[in-house]
Length: 69
Image 1 (tube, one colour):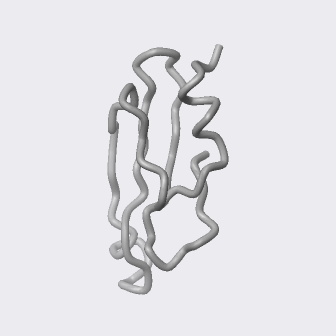
Image 2: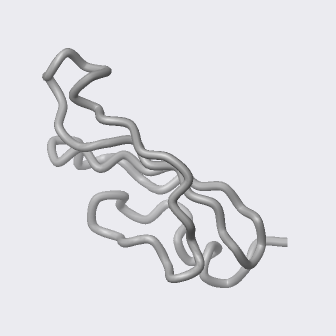
């Protein structure tokens, strides 16, 4: 079952909403490398230490539609 902090994170703007305290960063990959320099930021993957939910966020400063998924 998803914890309260993860439930509240769902669908929030990725670049404006920081990970909650129980999310552990699993990996981070530069968007610049993947996009040939067209994008800025990274794709970050997290795992919640409370409920085990896995999250991905796009921190590209130019993507105003990116949300926590």
